[in-house]
Length: 550
Figure 1 (cartoon, rainbow, N blue to C red):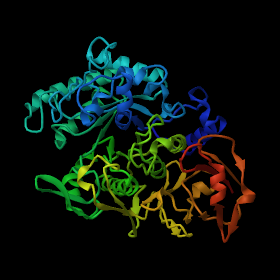
Figure 2 (figure 1 turned 45 degrees about the vertical axis):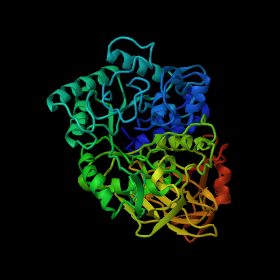
Figure 3 (figure 1 turned 135 degrees about the horizontal axis):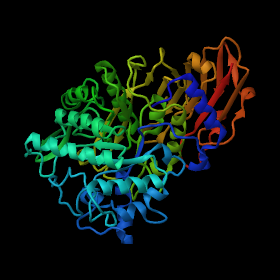
Figure 4 (figure 1 turned 90 degrees about the vertical axis):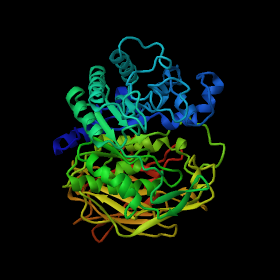
């Protein structure tokens, strides 16, 4: 459970400060339970050509979805020393489940569009040849191997259907539910930690999904079940229609709010799903406009969950600083073993793995928390819009090629706070901003990147003013993510006795009191000081931990 009491919070904070976060699993404090995971899908896609050339995988077909699906097997995951489960995120894997995405339960070379073999929940014998025994035994061995390598647990992508079903044919519901019970029993026996439920013959079948969650709680207690609803178009507010037999963009409003397509396809199902889901994922997005897409969907879904009385985590996918700043769970996909793109790359996510390390380190102190009416999500009426002119180098989604598409989100989103940050342009433009008060008293603020054709992806260094909650004034940790020109923290009656800081990736805390200003009850931290505190060794934006001693 999340750290919810002041006593638990102080104990965890002291433990985290006692050891360096980069010291490896043996020297880290015990992990607070979180629903975070690292997902194989993007790495399946980015390493496909290299694995095929090396002979690690053998499959028919091209490099489309079939090839990506086939780049998942025992060798790829566990080969010494570079198998993904062995080599990725040694600093953070104790707080993440290792999640196998699409492909683990079907034969190699499944033809495009063929969905009937999905839904078995049986570790495929072609892909995992050294695993034997019953379906539960095979999963149990996989759980053991993953956990022995230091990961928190095993997660599995699951298509919501039974084998033999597809988009136009469903088996009798009673038979499907009997099979579903048996599959949840296997998960419980094996100790599977997480299910990512995605598309499939019963994607929009709310009762099937509800039954899956109910059976999981009964038969696999402790396993989290993540639901979602496919958007159809992997961008916000974009409507596609057929032109000469091909999909083409008809309109692009750029937002979920006020979009009839989102309301019809996602909102009405999300209202039902969020009432019983453990986790709800914001779903697939399109590079490079990830920040406005993710921020918009996150604030919409959190507000829906609060309105319907749900208690779900909202999963923001591979957006670590957004998740850290709003108390949301992460579905990390980036990995340092990706080769550089052959075409243009704006985000360079594989060179920003330090952001994952820092976000996970922060969530040891302020774990993701479920939707709560007493920690409401609020967004500004003011919005910001990023635009991008898409080519085939940017995305697999063909309908946007040659089109300039806007994506819009609130300028600021807060959770559990009574006021919004004030953001002032210091000459570079303004970032998106997210901030929260955590139920355990921690406080976080993030300046999130903008994307444009001139600068690519960057965080404009702006002046950000925000009122600290009383808990932070009393010494609770403050997480600061991204770049700032200056960060002004208000609410003080007198200058603090001391301000200490360190990089969230680890290192010693140092006293920075003398380098901070104090004007009219506000502590002012210069952005250059924040940059010097956190100096990532890759392209990651900085993230620092502050403590204010009143």
